[in-house]
Amino acid sequence: MSLASETLDLAVIGGSGLYQFPGLEAIERRLVDTPYGPASGAVVIGRFAGRRIAFLARHGEGHSLPPHRVNYRANLWALHTLGARRVVGVNAVGGIRADLGPRSIVVPDQLIDYTHGRVSSYADDEGVQVRHIDFSEPYAASLRRELIDAGRRAGIAIVDGGCYGATQGPRLETRAEIARMKRDGCDLVGMTGMPEAALARELELDYACLALVANHAAGCGEEAQISVEEIFRHLAAATAQVPAIIAALLA
Ligand code: HPA
View 1 (tube, rainbow, N blue to C red):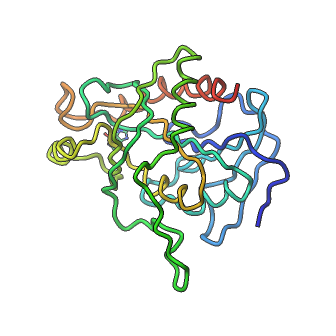
View 2: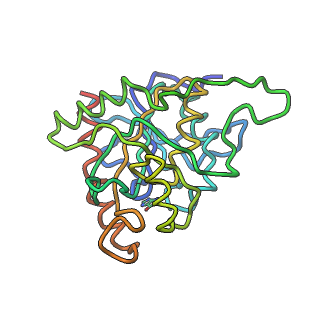
């Protein structure tokens, strides 16, 4: 079933610190009733940079949903139902790789999933036909490229590639966990990248991640502890760049 009256040029899922999309002129707010329950909130459809886009705050507009309680299936289903075919997920992350310090912006090209207990497929219900999707490349190459080109055109540095490690949260990781993730090849750590990317692939959506580095991951910086105030300060600075990147992508 499609509830789309017009096609959407893009959908953006906002992460921590991005609860409304600056500059988006809202036309309508849609609360979609999905077979998987409610999405994180209303999808705001409106005009931005001359295009029609949809925006959904992953954690709810008041950040009421922690990463392990986000209804990822409902969120992507709602966006798909409203006509989205391309989705950019904006995710706060910690930097593991030495050059990925606070305020870096990264478009990862790989991921490793360390989450557990999250419903991670639309084929979870009895009787539903299982589809083993190819996930060798978890992000859409074309949309990744467009994001990186958009950053270049907007004069905003974007790091091309990196491996996103998705952890369960909501707590931050131990130094030992980050050391293991580093050995595994992770460059970034975040709590919301999965199962979002896999569900997007199941729905055949083009999906890419725009990762905003808020802090050095545990044991990767100078400080003995990670300050949550610092996380939100750096995140706000990186988030402020997102509208210009998306505007350039849509241009
Ligand atoms: N770990 C996991 N998720 C995060 C972090 C982190 O250090 N920073 C922002 N999101």
